[in-house]
Length: 337
Image (cartoon, rainbow, N blue to C red; front, side):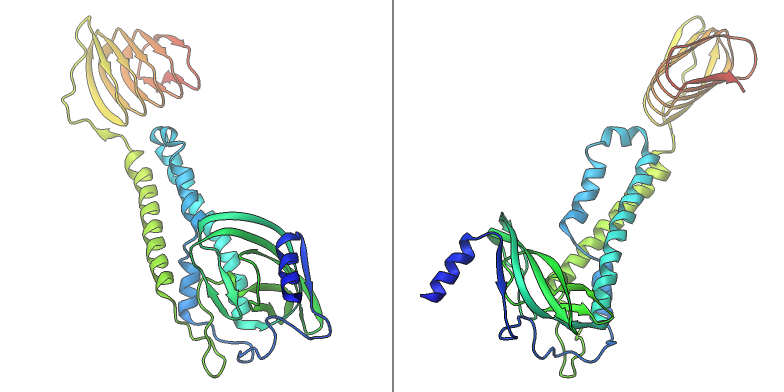
């Protein structure tokens, strides 16, 4: 009857608090099975921390790359810079957490859990929230309630607390840094299993899922940085147009358009119109007029009677003469040069 009453209170009360008096029950306490600190951290654990696979680590590049894709097509070098900063931000977060976890592996001791308090509940569908029983952590597909639990623990008479998110907390081991007991993590914070040998040292064996995750993340990082390099050196550099450079017809009009193209156009008294994005056009001879629109185009002309600039961030340079200039765009530059 008492057990049934206890379970009913556990399900219906939020927040819910458990207390253990007089040392009758200390979850996660008892023989730690750990060698004295400082302990050696296996190379496999370091590698797992350097090649993490987290769902939001995958989501961040997608958010950066896909929604503003039209902007990146126009400004590939800007994408390259943002891509590198995104990966640097991911690793800044990862390495900070890795420093805490690796420090606990080297200096951590098993803390005594004093009490727990359920702060809130939520519902997940087809997720893999971790659940710890002593040292063992399972990550199985799960649909149902998850909790945010405050855990109060004690190490060497110093009490502190941490907040744990995931499946309901049962008796997972809490590792606290003996040099700084306020720094602690549950074993669910580690993506790898914390197995120990008979002497209490870390074994360093990684499960297959961790190796698979490391391989996937390595491919993601390589592909992402390769895309950034391509944007910086390939997309951002105007290519050579394979089509022959047609001359501007005498007293006629020639239209040059496209994106990221480089052209040399002969002109003999005609009318040239340049549009598109990030094109580089070199005009030899004299044009009656040169009209530039679009974004980020660079046009150099020997001489012309008139220059008309529209669009944004276009650059027009003429070598000699005093053409009539009409600039109705934004950020354009028209000058002798």
